[in-house]
Length: 246
Image 1 (cartoon, rainbow, N blue to C red):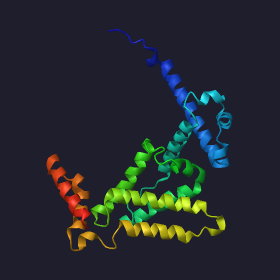
Image 2: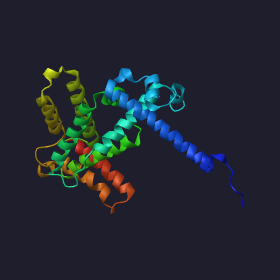
Image 3: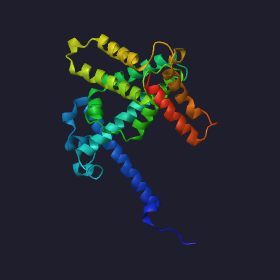
Image 4: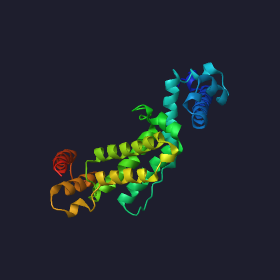
């Protein structure tokens, strides 16, 4: 059998690739640190290179331009936020769990204003990262538990959009206000408005009408194996139609 001699698969090539990744990560972390300490205006090629201990041209071996670096900083921000997320395996209830998740998202934004602005300054910046997708799965899990219990007032995708929109709006509005006008009641009111828009006061499956029951059954479908894929698809279509009438 022929021995592989491709340089790309040699130990030296693997070490070189690992070294490049370490330098790339150092550049990202240096940019994120400058952003946190001095604001977005401090994130220049020269300043980032000095903080990372590399020559300025080296940055462009990893990123096409500064926008590319900021995209990577946004991904770093999503990873940092994901690491801070607390998933309570035994929450007091699905609505309290929703409140806790919303509070955590807002607290992260208030504690990291410059990073938050980079993460959400462009509508889709960093949203293809693994950390963003993992964070969305945590949120969708919270929403799915609401739906399964009959607490969800709206469609699951609309619920996710409402939760995101109110959290972002709360953070950006708070940060736009002069410090002497930042009233914590604003955050509480926005959170409770979100809860009212997304959930019902009592589980909808206890009420007359098919919409709440349809949402609860639709949420439970992935857990059962009795139906074929085609049957699940057809039933999901029917349940979507029923749920949209509530």
